[in-house]
Image (cartoon, rainbow, N blue to C red; front, side):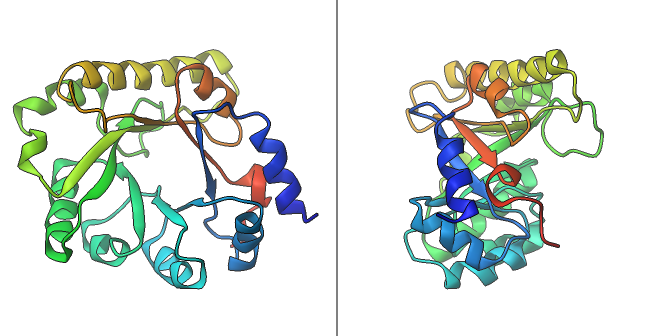
Length: 223
């Protein structure tokens, strides 16, 4: 049994039914991804458009690719043929760009809105207040080639588990408010993506339905 396989199987033991595991494969070679695939993994996360578009043709067609990094509008066309879910919609401008490209190629793109609750200013996303006000500027029918499936968020980079749990709770609160408000009656709004290698148990406890785990599966990144 390969190291990747054994790590993957161990991680799965800690993830409850109903929570999707995205194997964050960025910076790792296709050979490592294939090992995970052979162990049954189908959801893989990439954060660079060029890397995603290079790896996708090298992997089986039933892989579900997740784009989890900051997506520039000029890279939308590059990722769209491959991606199953974009986690990182951080502006209405980007949402509209994805909608336009999806319309051009005749598909509906599944996306998550990224929420910024972490203390690091370098992270992208809507603040909870901006999400609360988004209905004044946008309605789901405005972008018919985009299906907003839920929210994605990251906790602060800290060892303070109280702060991490509070961050995840803030993202979950924003998700629940949208689910009962702007997206009420839309069963496809069902995904709360939060939690990585260091903090996914806390994210699951706060209500996460999708975790993004890289290091615990593939080891240290290979740059």
